[in-house]
Image (tube, rainbow, N blue to C red; front, side, top):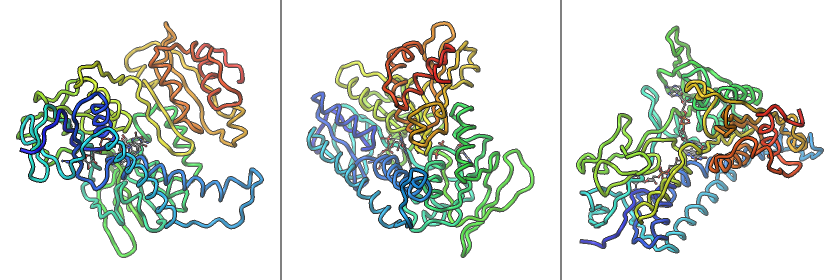
Length: 464
Ligand code: FAD
Ligand code: NAI
């Protein structure tokens, strides 16, 4: 029998690697199994980090090409060096994944390289070796959902992984799915010169988003040149010498039409990854969507000593949600009181403008019969946004009608993903809109739009 541990985590994404580090900090003997050649999971290798690197680079290109002249900065001929842009993205990923390797060494977490399998409760197999452990943590993440009739080759029909690696800018990129990935990567390639059409099954973008924000988001992206085919499904794809011909049908039925694309990005969601883990043999129950079933807030699976966190369990598939669960579970395993506040997990779409949201949407409040107040403030009335030349969007705060407690916030605008952190803290502390409104905010800052929206909850915004 090989070495034994207190905790073996399977999967080194943001859920798994953070759980491993926190458990080691708390004095447990920890190993983390990862089959990829580098640590960091989907997020660092083919997800959050490379997509944000390309969003940043492509936004610089767009600014140089279309926005700097307005500021009196003339840069002459702007040319795209896509090879360099992709190489830079690779360098950013490399620095991040090496950082996790450093953190494992620093915290004495053993990296077991290879594919992990649950042999039985208390035993994990990696490369033919069996390791004993008190606790097994499943943190194997997720993969893209395939679309029947549309075969992915990662060259012409791509998932996000191929969509981060295109060797040239496609003439026409068709994105299937108007969610996080479709809109972020669609924005990247649109900025770099592609014509982009988003085909979405539902009647709105990012369906989980507050409707008012969603509508403005669609208008703003439309102004940028993105085309939309909502309430439409793709039923087939035919590859030819000059790209792909897609068959589209109205979601509710009706005559089909064809749409030609040079590249097709399939981004219709992700599903839990549990293949080859030996979960069924070990008796670990899955839910109706193939996710590992856990006791809410406790991460315990149906088998004692086997736990699960991150994309492989229910909840939003977000890196910071996985990380919070990793920390909470490590603390529970060490006898502490780890906890995740699922009511205050922000979600951010890193387009420009950014879109950020936390807590409940107006539609959700209405559906559960909650009496609420709304405060809204547009960036057109914010001095800093005007100085930046970034006035698209608004801040919307929803508060309990009786107690004024903040129930949710939805922002579309410059740096919305950073602005939402203020509301996350307010919600963690159970703050009222009045608390946010009475807090002194630096001038001139984008955050003043948050303060003004909080004032607007009580009908007393000052600058509109
Ligand atoms: P993962 O990160 O998927 O990690 C799981 C790891 O387990 C993988 O490395 C896998 O190789 C390994 N593994 C699986 N099975 C085994 C096995 N049997 N043995 C050994 N190892 C195994 N989220 C955000 O919050 N912000 C963003 O900006 C963002 N951008 C994204 C962009 C894209 C293009 C994509 C695809 C996702 C993005 N996400 C983003 C989502 C985010 O990446 C996931 O929510 C997050 O990575 C989930 O973390 P995890 O630890 O649960 O799983
Ligand atoms: P998504 O769930 O965000 O969006 C998928 C979209 O596809 C939905 O709007 C859905 O209605 C639509 N759809 C589903 N089936 C369809 C079909 N057959 N035809 C047309 N449209 C269809 O999923 P996405 O974009 O693939 O991303 C997966 C997950 O990764 C996200 O939910 C998010 O959790 C995470 N992510 C987070 C990011 C961030 O935090 N900035 C960035 C990228 C991904």
